Image 1 (tube, rainbow, N blue to C red):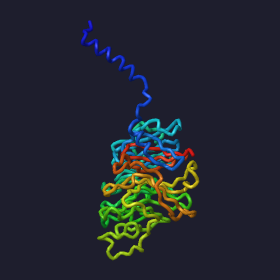
Image 2 (tube, rainbow, N blue to C red):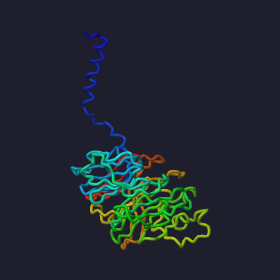
Image 3 (tube, rainbow, N blue to C red):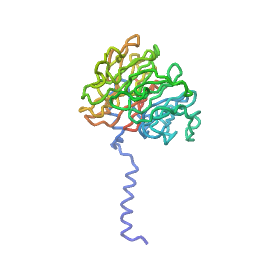
Image 4 (cartoon, rainbow, N blue to C red):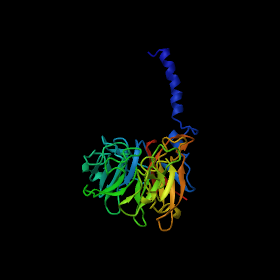
Length: 378
């Protein structure tokens, strides 16, 4: 027998359950979707979620079957398959775990290469083993293990070699080992390591010109010289052996107070373009797709992660550097997408870009734990 005390709540719950089952036309969107509405883009462009819940999403790479791989600053690497090609990942798959800040990812000959702080590893035949937690093959394990500027951005160049930077283990210092402050390259099997570029404080993004195959890369300037010095850099390396100034000069003409004494700025390769001061320019990418309007093709897009200790925050956006007809000179620098910074409160931090085969542009975000998709509908 049901007592009166128990019976009354059951009567009250029934209409509440019925009401909850009926969609309410004014129900607000989830907070994350509201945030996306804050992103400002040029006319004709739209932004949407390619994937949510991608913890600490960093570098992006795409396999031959269209699966997107995501490195992180945590301990995991993710795969984002989009089997029905609807512009949104079907699921977030943890490919590997227990790694040492596996920021870098690259795909070659069906294998996924992963750049940890201290080594580069490889997962063969990855597309067929996404959920098997395969054991990696060690490609190279002699990278420095220091955390400061230790995130490894990796990518295969037009020469078939794998490029990997080693940032300075400090704000500004004379590196204790020659490998610090460099961009290096090695064969796909891990042999033949050589230094490609010198005097690079901390690059977490590079790409090659579709016109002349020259490497372009971002570099972050030092801290503790004030809010407005130095600018971050966009650099062009037409070939190996160039020195880009660290630790003696920043942005081409800002001497280090300690190490720039008695040095000549003309000794070093100047940046192709000065970027904003402390914007934390990261994973730059040439737009090589065919879906964006012609004025965006073969131009450089730069995710700016955002200033961390500037009095007034800047960055937290995607910038566009337009090149001249030769593709060798930067002629303008402008904002392409913004809105991750609201007032002085950021809700997201763009990290890396990836041009998909369908011509859309993916953007990773290690604060909002997401990957976005920017497309053009005209």
